[in-house]
Length: 479
Image (cartoon, rainbow, N blue to C red; front, side):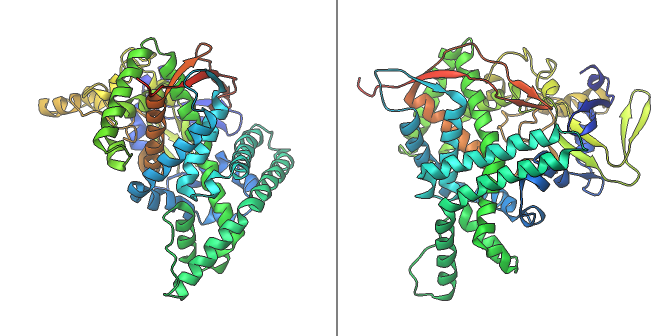
């Protein structure tokens, strides 16, 4: 972090990308605001999941309409999707955590979170009965794991043999896809047939569901390419949405549980969360709505604090320099030119643990985000240091900035990305995670069986290669 604080870009070796230039925090806003012609994001992201090997149908990479569905339709329709997610969460917790209010149940936390998130997310992605089919959900998780782990293996492989390893990983990913396809193809074909018939026959009494699959079909119809309506391709797009969301969300909620229930003041934190969730749910009439979920301010702050303390990577948000002449960064000794083809990244973990931004930075303290002025935007701090012309009113406004939401984008919190190409599904994911945490604190007692385990650093990711276990017990409803 010494180079970053000195406002000097520096190079670190990375197994999967070669030399990576780390952008100093003071320059994040300037650098990550550059246009795509100067700083490319999409090819870089595809390199992260090694899509040339892990995704056999490159059409869904070249035309990523499924990403537009996440960014647009799924965000705009959260009011409709929220009750669906809540229903599937209740079903999932009943199945995986149980309803026993007498005996404790021991769980492997990573497996448990992945199963719960897969069911809840697909309540919005495709709906029942598919989202409740255990074989379908298992095959989804297997495919996502093949893509995620396979991409890391390919990235860590020397370039000379990468095509060979890539082909083997690609075979496994396609094998997992074919397993999923056997289960869900009839469902997708029926949905496609109903969509076509409803368009052609006004008397056909079928209302298109409001879910991710239907929006993928609608967007596919709009491309004008009939191959986009091939049921296999539509299924691939549905799986792609799962691939990019299941592990990131499951990773986050696992860490939320471990951070919250391992905190020194866990009992009081859980009590405060339970009080907020109970009050908000009662005010909403006993059923979760989008507005009710948005009112879970302390839940939001708890998620944000966990994402700060346990980011998914030490460095992240990779971009590739595309401008023929490179891009310019500042350094204490003058301007530095970063040549075309260089991968740059942001120092996520160092920023999130910077004590000058987050007092007592290594302590889990959700209230830092819950209280107004609890955290200053890092850019405000740097501007305040450098701009002698800033007014006192401007400084005061920066100091008293309102409590931030977990989806707020600034250069002091990088959990959902930064700049113009931040996570497109952040609103959907946060909505889901807030209901996840609310359901736990309202319905279960949780105890961690061991101290908070350290995450394993793999390349530049922090992955849950541990056997963390918790025990849970349903809260008795009998006075």
